[in-house]
Image (cartoon, rainbow, N blue to C red; front, side):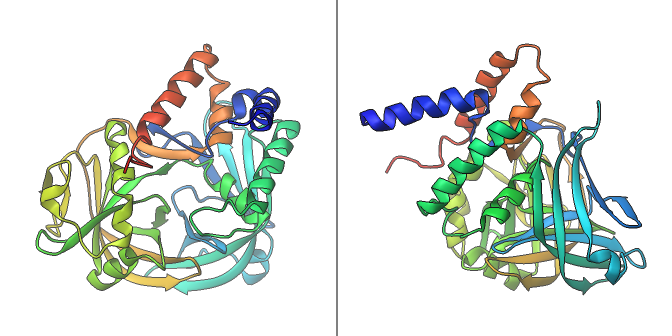
Length: 342
């Protein structure tokens, strides 16, 4: 490390302190998550959409909200809506907001799926001064072309994406096919959409999305926190047509309805029939009907949140510094195979 680099690092640590955490922060949480509620608010609209919401695409950042048939806001109401992310318990603090621009509606059975892009973003997890410094740092990295795996997002999209990850996202393993021809890979852009529907997004340029589209059925497995590191080990499977099941570092079993191979340690498994998908931009968004949802254990599930929200969470701990060190060590442990040695 050069002297200039070392000085910059010390200044950054001094200014940002305990809030200098990884943007993607991994941890174990109860499933389903109980920390955050998401409300859709506007003129004449105020409803809880926590379990009717999924990110559909990163570039352009697109959010899908599912509405029961006959309950979708009017076109006038759709033009002025805001997602509000708040603490579910305690003082119910508002932690973030995303102003929404309506884009399109997809009609399904008893459900309308409405797609939005962000028009504004507010984050209340950190004091304004520290938040501004973080944004300057992010803008500098963006200027240096430090994007997310080839995805180019506007500064607004990046800030809004940070807010979406105030709500904990389960990191899941997607199983498709069978032992003769199938694949297994991780994903975390997903969510319930109401009426037994579940949505998830996969990169359009990766083979995994094509495999799912061709198969029409998947099993989604949530992971116990202790097995979370395996999601990173399997990341390259997004680029492959199939997996050699015999070479996996764990045993598999068969899902209850579709007979798809799933990890032996799977904590909760959703079996889906894909009934529609839509290419949005950098991602294809899949909407599936839940055929079966089986819970095998109630351990803490492997999840990701934004580092800003983790900084806010830490304020609740009496021994904050101790919990900060513990959670950072756990996050590092989870990611130990993100960049494996060659």
